[in-house]
Image 1 (cartoon, rainbow, N blue to C red):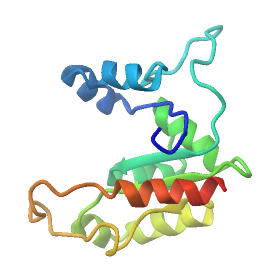
Image 2: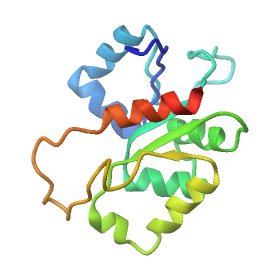
Image 3: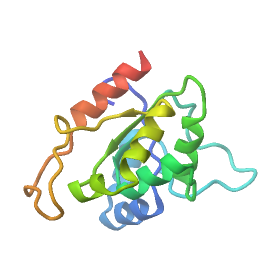
Length: 157
């Protein structure tokens, strides 16, 4: 929003529960002026969000990355982004927030390759998010929001 974008938020069901419990969901709705979604709309309901110029998945868990890479769309957020990956000309930016164990999993590189083959811009690598062993990352590590937003800028221009 600081870059002049209109932001609409769609969450996974788990993220929706977390943000509802913390009160952050309502704060996001006030900030964006749009409803925050974590459930599909019912038949006949109007679309609550404007047309999308770019999808951003940040942070994306290892589970989210695996589901996007394999086309599993079992919630509203995954359905929207999965469809976007198959839509020509609609950029998708994903920041995988994972650890070294996730990245060593035998399926991981295939997931990364599949997303790249689908045209997804991955904000990923040691220069963006160094991988630590599980529970060894420094406390209070900030997410690389500038890198994510710069990737969006590069994708929509």
